[in-house]
Length: 168
Image 1 (spheres, rainbow, N blue to C red):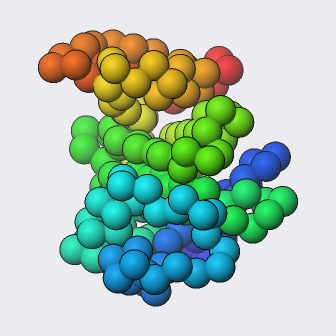
Image 2 (cartoon, rainbow, N blue to C red):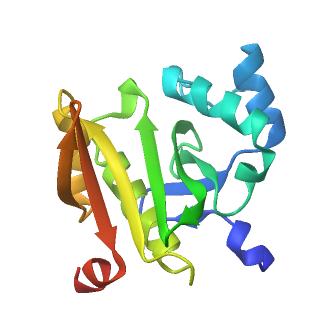
């Protein structure tokens, strides 16, 4: 893996960069760096930080990333791939803090990280789940090009395959 794979992925408005071990520790200990949005970390970010502490390999290029506004430099959420793939499929998860919702950041970040995942030779499909009770999250996946393929226990399951992505 070349060092360029660990550089931030950038979109028009965002940089998606790997978490650092000190950022994981800051979330777990309640330390507040100045470059975090006022309402970061959200509940899901605490869960991810705990998982990253237990699974340091997830801090790699194909793991979890912070969502950073390029204009302000503020961390406004997190997004990640649950690496390694199983049967050529990798799961993606995301969250944007309440103060930055409604701006399309989650869709923009999801598109970028899904494209990054599908560029890996061992990945053919990116999967995601969203609670039916969370219509905003359902819209994020639909706008990012994912297709709903199942619903179970209140969770809608979505897929984006390499051929689907190439048609966008």
